[in-house]
Length: 214
Image (tube, rainbow, N blue to C red):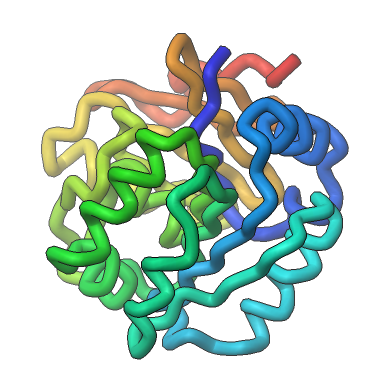
C-alpha cells in the first residue's frame, strides 16, 4: 500500500507507536529520505513544538531538520528530494492561511509528487483532508485524503462529527486521542483500531471501525 499521508489526533504516536515508527522507517528507506521539515504556522511557529519534531526526526535518523516558518519562505529551496513533512496542530485557519499561499501550496504539491511523507497532527490532519474552519464551516483543505476529519473529541461525544453531517459531509473520519490513520492508495488503516468512519446519516454507534494497520 502506497502511503503518503498520516493523520494523527495528537503527537503521541510519533513517540510511542512502534507500528508507525516501522512504517515511517520503511518509507524513508524506500524513498531515500534524509530530511525532516516541520511547518508550525498553525501554532504561531512556537519553537517548543519544533523541538518535539526534532526529537521525532532524530528517532527516525533523519540527518537534516528544518523549521519552515511563515517568515522564511526561502527555506522552500531546501531540497528537491522527498522529505518527511510534519504539519503542526493548532489553529486550523491560521495554518491554512500559510499552507494555501500561492508559493507554499504548489511546493507542497511538488513534494507530494516527489514521494514525500506528510504527517498531519490535529489541525494538520484536517489540512491533509477536509474539516471545519473556525467559523464552523466545512472546508476542503488540501483534500489529499478523501474525508472530512474530526480529532480527539471522544470525551465530548464528537460534536464536530454532527456539525460535519449537518454540513453535508458524506465521508467523516473520527480519530480519538492517541490514535492515527494511515492513508494509502487502497484504503485507510488505524494505528490502534480506534478510529472510525461514518456517512452523513450514520449515528455514532453505527460508524465503521477502521482495520488496524498490518
